[in-house]
Amino acid sequence: MNNLFHWVGIQSAPTASRLWTAGLGAAFGILAAGLAVRFWPQMGLGLPLLVAPIGASAVLLFAVPASPLAQPWAIVGGNTVSALCGIFWMKVLGDPAYAACLAVASAIVAMSLARCLHPPGGACALTCVIGGKAVVAAGWSFALVPVALDSALLVAFGVLYNSAVRGNYPHRAAQFAAPGPVRAGFSMADIESVLSQYDQLLDVSSEDLDTLFRQVETRAYRRLHGTIRCEQIMREDGLTLRPEDGLARAVALFGGHRIGALPVVDAEGRLEGLLRLDSLVSVGEEARVEQVMDNSPCIAAADAPIDELLPILSGGMYHEALVVDARGHLLGMITQTDLLCALWRGHIAEQIALHEGGKAG
Image (cartoon, rainbow, N blue to C red; front, side, top):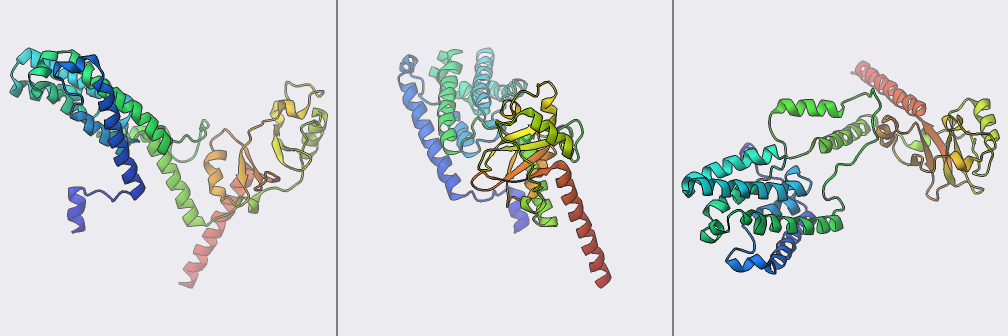
């Protein structure tokens, strides 16, 4: 039975919140578009307020807003381009039977070339062929009103609604720190290469795949190696600067301890920033620390697992993370070297456990 369900493609059940969010969004989106179009001057010519494919667009926009097929250009561009294809073939052939097949086929090609593939676009092309005398009489203007207008109004409401309830529409994948010239593991180029060989359109962007795979990597590491917290590997050498300190003191600390960065704290020990050695190159010693320090360093909680730092410290943007408590007081610092040593110790411990387990067996 499970094989049958898999073969017919029965989808996993959505959560209740996602179900209600999608349903209410579609209802209000269609209502908003219909009410707005009602006041358009051309609507007195016997044309429909809403074209049926807009309902299918609403399904994508509110049920799967992260899909590449549900983005603003896909909806507006896909529906409009497809409508133009349908109008063209109806004008050329005049026979709905022949015009219909060519309208849908050319709509797929046109949407793909315009990079706005949108499944309801096929229905838009067909609507322009079989929509009746009023649609045919409207000619090219039907692609603009009501098709493009309906699509634009639906997208406008979708932006407001999805941004309010989900906070991410138009959809953009979460960005990791920009990778350096060489990094371990897979890269975006690897994903793009595999997708080009796959030769099928996946309803997910390469950026989303990259984000998903990196989260899977982190979960897998945590499952295999257990959880090591930041407070277990951080440095607590107590070397800090004050914002009002002169750079002469910073130079002395850098030279005396051979370190590359120093935390900057206030009188109560709350983190203010980070001063890096390379930031002193073109600054005179008469300047103050607060004038050249980084005000937005990487910050980690004491109880955070160190695998959360992997994509951050390996990405090239940050070389150290500052560990703070709930009130923002500095507790310690973790460098790339500290993280690498912790990972190596975890690997050695795992190998010893496997060896001992093999001997016991």
